[in-house]
Image 1 (cartoon, one colour):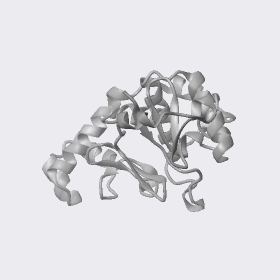
Image 2: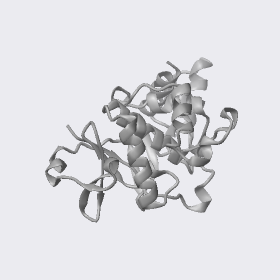
Image 3: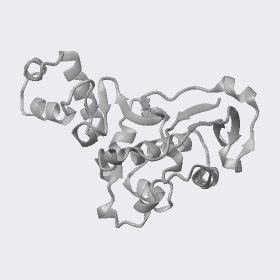
Image 4: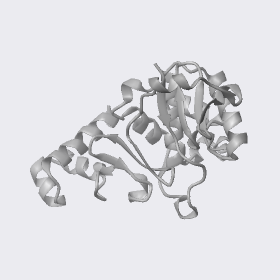
Length: 231
């Protein structure tokens, strides 16, 4: 079955360049802590660093020492999509071919953050000028009949064709413009980590909910997320 992997247009607005920043261990936890974790290729810090060194995120990251790597929101989502491609059994030869072609075609520093992308398990496809193109075969036309097998990957929202938020778990949202992109209770500026810290200190979910003017369901969703990424 062909799986749709929605990505986004190149280049965030200038005022978002440093909004939403993560270190490598955080990126690993968020990628594999999502509700679609069963569909995501298992990654660890070493594997993620290797992908970055091989240039499939921002080229500027590949040249940085590991202890200075700061992953932006766009890089985080791009790396998550690469993990989804690997989970769909797309090999790195196809990923590198698609990356090279997309970078040349879009002039984007994050080539896996430029278009709506699909995979059927061996190749990577984009829609360009209403035609289905094989990005992993340097722009070769693909059969339109493949569209009927497309299945969306949920969790991303878009603004002006740029991924603006990611909901990795029900009720939890990463917005690069809110709390530096930290996971927050959806629709609020309350970090899930703050809620988890109060629960760990012995406060009841009801007390935490009242303190932040949240529902107990929102508090439970935040706790479930934090427990998941701590596992």
